[in-house]
Amino acid sequence: MDELRDLYQEMLLDHHKHPRNYGKLENANRKAEGYNPLCGDKVTIYLLLHDDVIEDIAFEGVGCAICKASCSVMTEVLKGRPEAEAEKLFGEFHDLVTSDPDSMVDTDGLGKLAIFAGVREFPMRIKCATLAWHTMRAALRQSDDVVTTE
Image: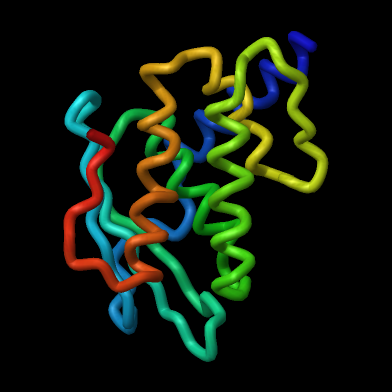
């Protein structure tokens, strides 16, 4: 179990130091901003949605390692997926990081998202991990309000 935890931490740090899909998406047709006042995380999620499919997705912003890694992994996982699947993954990710730390969580089928399972052991960090997802959801719904974790 410790080896798996070490691997997950290594992957989180890699996504923090070398975020995927980082930068403004010039041809985006959806955009939303998110802010976590407890940690100071600020992100902007850009989507190119066509025929209910996320053809492209990117992010900009500043944040802690968990927030930035969450943005990075989320963009990799959602690129090319239908909007309905993105909504489903939002729920599965949210359940993963907010479930009771002592409960067994089935991470099969979550792929790279499983690296965030340990976040649930640190309640103050859950908002860092979920900010990207709430902001992506606001972009899908074309909400003009800044997403906040408070």
